[in-house]
Image 1 (cartoon, one colour):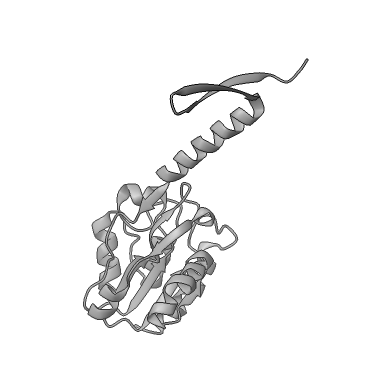
Image 2 (image 1 turned 60 degrees about the vertical axis):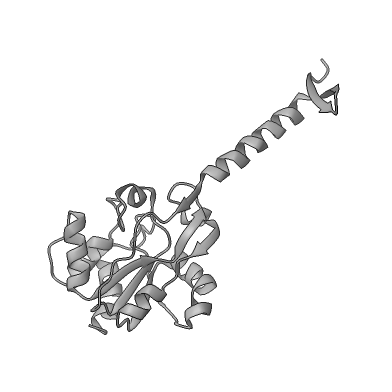
Length: 203
């Protein structure tokens, strides 16, 4: 049997012109159009503000909030992310549960939280899918808190920081292993051992 054809109608001024094209070509064009529309919907803006006060000494930067964090409108919202367990362990404190408890843990211990990216195209929570990114302006924090050190949480955050923020601030960041569940090679104990000295040193 021959290849199926579909009648594709286009307009040239007032004249209607019929074009016969291969159905596979038609389907590909349709899929590409749908993908472009979907990509536009995947543009995300950072949905919550930085966390810091006038006593914050260490700024910890993630890459961009996960889907769960965007829904909660707060940092490290995925239940499998080890960030809150790591910070609580470093300071020998109870693991915080509510957003208010998490805020108190961070500020009480002179930390600050923010992310490298302000806006980007992203698929779900995948850092690897981030493109067309726009960086956050760190000047609000750096101008109003005695920040002595910047830590980036994971290699993706480091890559984005070096590309977008370091050229502006001139400040080199310390990269620590990601607390994300995707970093399964690192146990909670190993994460705490890596994070503790970098935080204790400046507090």
